[in-house]
Image 1 (cartoon, helix red, strand yellow):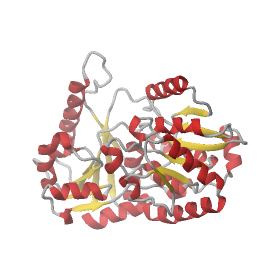
Image 2 (image 1 turned 90 degrees about the horizontal axis):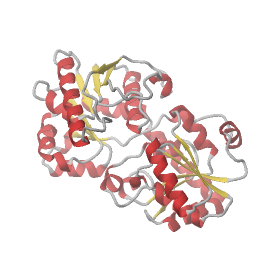
Image 3 (image 1 turned 30 degrees about the vertical axis):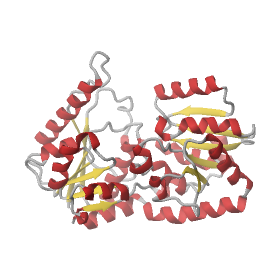
Image 4 (image 1 turned 60 degrees about the horizontal axis):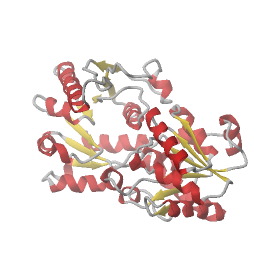
Amino acid sequence: MKIVYLANVRIPTEKAHGLQIMKMVEAFKNEGVEIELVAAKRINNQLEGFDPFDYYGLDKKFPIKKLWLFDLVDVKWLPRKLSVPLQNTTFAISALIYLIRSKADIIYSRDEFSLFLLSLLKKNLILELHTFPNSKLSLYKYLLKKVKKIVVITNYLKDLIVDLGVDPNKIIICPDGVDVKQFDIKESREECRQKLNLPLEKNIILYTGHLFYWKGVYTLVESGQFLSDKELILIVGGMENDQKKLIQYIEEKKIKNVLLVGHKNPKDIPYYLRAADILALPNSGEKLISIHYTSPLKMFEYMAAKRPIVASDLPSVREILNPANAVLVAPDVAYELAEGFKKVLADKNFSEMIVNQAYQLVLNYDWYQRAKIILANIQ
């Protein structure tokens, strides 16, 4: 089988979707698929000089083709309401030209606009959906009927699509995943702290990922007001502008014991997770993407890292986590989040129990398992 994975993204990118796409392409290749990644040639990729296979820690290599597009998103004089559609349209046109004579058995993509254009000429299309398109519903209704299969990351997304009249048998539910072996590192917690220059005496509460408000990072830093000086909230990730906003918020609130270390190479994340005592997943309950649509990569990485998880009690999180494998707390309540951290720190036996339960479960969510499920449904 030959698959083209079409992605209107920068590769490499500091955003999680880049990791997810690269890992899935590698997983498809691992299953014997002849595969090519077709991505966007962006002019503002600060990671352009990095080898994408080394950056993401991939063992298997595959061809990557980058397509031309008008990349004016960062041009200050052009409003985003114009630059983003221009970017998406020109990428879709480039994709159509490049793939019009493709002999691939499947064109697989998370880019709905490119698939919309390709659907005028192609029938071998697979759409992977990570959110529900309320603003472009008419386009999606057409596209959902034209594509061969639809991959969704939550049961809730499947229900919404079925409500639009789509055949349930056309939909494949596949939450995100993790490369479990990548997090099976030999270094101890203390060795990782020494390697990363982190304090040995603190109880480290770690968050990895972006710093968007719906990710709950503002509630996380506020929880520091209810913790002792023995605890350190460590935040890894985020784009520079978001880091500045969060630092300003921390300073205004005079919150102590919070450390931001910025974006790190994905290969370094297993060491940060192993260095922690607790891993935080504080998603907000104020946005639909957080409540119902997301299947956080960090959640699976946390589970694979064998560290106790304290997470917001949301339907999206509940699709994987439960009180047997994590501590679930009310979202957007800093005091409740802090109490969750205290519960883990106070009961070592309980902490070990939820860690073991989470790890046994995450073995079912390896990227290779995900690729096998998708291939079994599309072959």
